Image 1 (cartoon, rainbow, N blue to C red):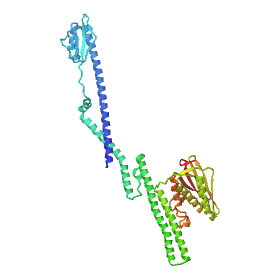
Image 2: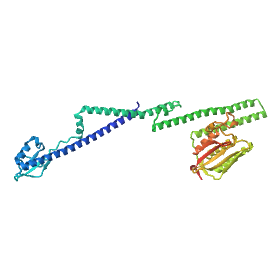
Image 3: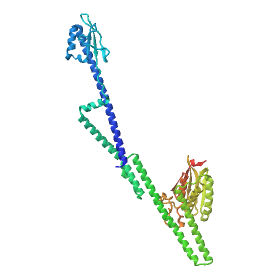
Image 4: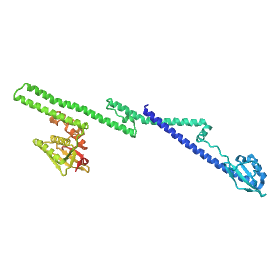
Length: 448
């Protein structure tokens, strides 16, 4: 058992004991006070009835009859300190008393049939005040065995309840601790939702969040491993070709050397392009902060990109068109946003069929965002690959040559760049033929 278990157990147990003691104390005081009130009412009623009887005896029986009543222990008047005084202030039994005594009470005068007048008094001696603790312990003193049994049962039940509650709360935390330790040691497959059980509380939510975090981290680490493997493969191919070209160049002279050197230059440029894209993607994945200090007319930016892409597309008997009725001024990083949109449009130009058009449209998606749609007329993407389309080094073709679609980094960079601007990017197959990529950017990042 860890420290948290014992802290929860002892605190809950101590709290239950305090609550039980407080409730018992309050109940005992209430019961004692209720009994005291009942006894006082009964005593007052009893004295009044006895004084009334004594007054009748005195009125019709005279002095001597009243004396007999006072002397008679069975009448119960002596223990209540009842006194009868004649008109000469003499107590008929010769007893002395002080009217200033606490509890002194005078009753209505009684006139006998002989014409004598007597006064009747009573002095109720105050009972000794018992402390609250004494009143609480009085039942215990009467039957200590029963109360000790009750106390033992209460402690046992409260300890069992607190033990179960402390275990219920601390066990899943212990499971999370163990899972976190295993995860930090490299066991990326560890999950805790099944180990916690069928709980429906914040701890279960924490376990689910841990599983989501673990799955995300595992995916990122696996992607990183795959990224390194793919980069290694991509770099190895042009380097190998460069080595071959260098070897051939050594054995040739004149114009033949120039062609090999041109080949080396092309491969070097490809390496530079690949490394540049990889670094950009790496920075975006790492959360690098790029300044958003540019205000761009999104319609004008798209016009420039479409013009550049058309210059290349015309050689392939392809075309890019732009349609929009309204534009917005976007607060963004112009280089990132331009590269993202250019990568998407160039990718569409690469895959659209010959003698077809890539359609770029800009419109308002909803009240708080605008949307850019880039649609080609190619073969589309298999449905099982659409969700992986924006991952690094993902291609539609299994071939790893540049003609199959570049290095597979363009759309991955576009996704990270759009997300950097608080937007999102999705892909969908068109109804008949082709693929559409939709970019949505919220208007709270723009000036209309």
